[in-house]
Image (cartoon, rainbow, N blue to C red; front, side, top):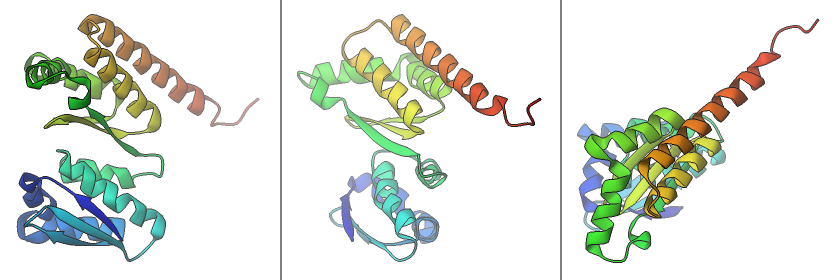
Length: 185
């Protein structure tokens, strides 16, 4: 059994209307959730497949970090799916600096965050003092690198170029991977 602590304002999202989301997570991840809505503590107990059960705490943590339940459940799509967090607060000197850096990650009208998602295929959520990422290893890696570049003060244009490059690399690797699927002559 693992214990995960999530913010008070995310407990309702985790439970869902009439407990619907909680039941879906329990069924999909083959776990049992014991949610203490007083302090935000969630006990996650594996009741089925231990490998699927390992993703249970990650799903709860992802929802706690601002992901919609259906995005968090993507972690079960395949064994390679990862959930990662970039701590914006740790890269900031003070409250104002954190606000500014968070703004850089979000971008004007949310455009930077959207581009991170579009060009990598990962899900990206900025919530509180963290940036959460769900995706395949190379997608998560690309978003993490882009976020760290922005937090270090890199110009947005340079970060967008980096993301474009990663996008083309991943697309090319995907084509390489599927190129020889038919019969070879």
